[in-house]
Length: 298
Ligand SMILES: Nc1ncnc2c1ncn2[C@@H]1O[C@H](COP(=O)(O)OP(=O)(O)OP(=O)(O)O)[C@@H](O)[C@H]1O
Image 1 (cartoon, protein in one colour):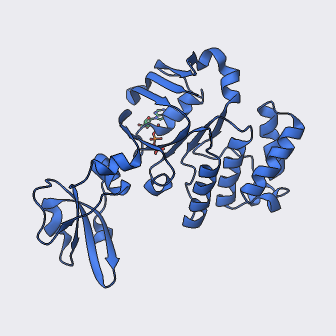
Image 2 (spheres, protein in one colour):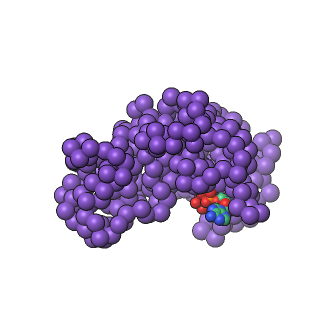
Image 3 (tube, helix red, strand yellow):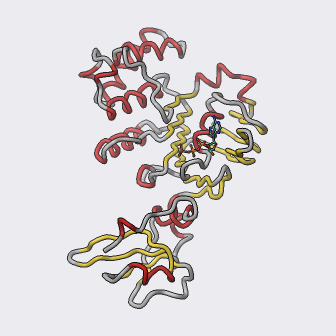
């Protein structure tokens, strides 16, 4: 199974949302990381044929998806960034409705819906109206609808948005469980959503794909660029050395983690540490999202 993007471009007026993107996806979980406006949703909507490319092509097993629209859409599950639910429907009605849109047989829908409602822990709410569900429950229902037709390609646009840490973890585990033999593309700007489950990380910046690598390879590339220092003086003193990645407490001590401007120039008493994916994100996107130092002030 191979999903290919060739020279894929999308512009909105003057805005280049996606800029000549080339990518090949085989079964596995791909974490699509990028800050706001990087083009993540645009790429996903292009794959789901919700918008048309300005240029370029998407191929599934070598065939232009536009030539085989219905067959391709039968293989696809999509969880959009914003709710696609109908508040007046019950949970079960909604899944039956999605099943009929996907051309599934009633019996198949009933069986699959029951299984997914069990797995997403929504079974007790199946007769409840969607408007009465919590945000986390609605998010899980959106995930369930994307999986209804057991798709080979699963497109998840910020699936954990708005979830508390425990629900985030649960959904992440569910994604990993359902990933077998599927191409899963998961967009997020939350590194922890994907660092443990993604086989490849795609870094998207201003519509361009700047890296495609396994998480371990991305972190290795930053070796000798990240240090840690036990520090309790004003953070401004560290600014000449690099960019603060995080601050944490270990026992009674406070440590600052720094992405170095120059690996040869460390602050006094600092020592190198193994980079994390969070460091990778800050390293590549540091000019995109200004990290406020306010909440870092000691
Ligand atoms: N319908 C539209 N009309 C005009 N501009 C758009 C439209 N959709 C997206 N854009 C622009 O295209 C660029 C990419 O947007 P996109 O939503 O794909 O980014 P994103 O990475 O998904 O961002 P976020 O993380 O905020 O969801 C942005 O500059 C955005 O403003």
